[in-house]
Image 1 (cartoon, one colour):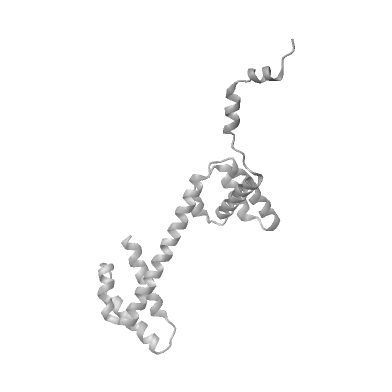
Image 2 (cartoon, rainbow, N blue to C red; image 1 turned 30 degrees about the vertical axis):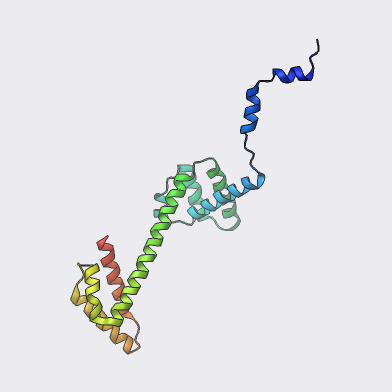
Length: 182
């Protein structure tokens, strides 16, 4: 009553063979890279301020771990970062990554706006009253007289090699106009 090996193999259901084909093997290096990426994501969150953290969907445990890491220095911080990375492994990080990307994009948009305002300010100082209508087209709420006075003061400061007080005031005024426009 002994069965041969071939008979045993015939008794094995075909389903197991199909399941073996579906197994995806992940290398140890890939697992480590994924863990390191999650740790880096945690480090980005630790570097954020409280207002920015409020905009990211975090559960209480993870939020507490991040806030603790913000208070700790040196070796304790490194270990806390390891813990945060470990906590992220058991969570869906896609909403967190999306929220972080939105925060970064907002920062990039703000930097871009500041560059545009700097170019506009430089144009105002170089061209004087000729550039004021361009600013009024962009920002209809702008006060023509105040803008002209700031431009004249900036030109005088530049000619006299004085500190650029009015130059900075023009930028501040343009920034206020841009913020009220949005």
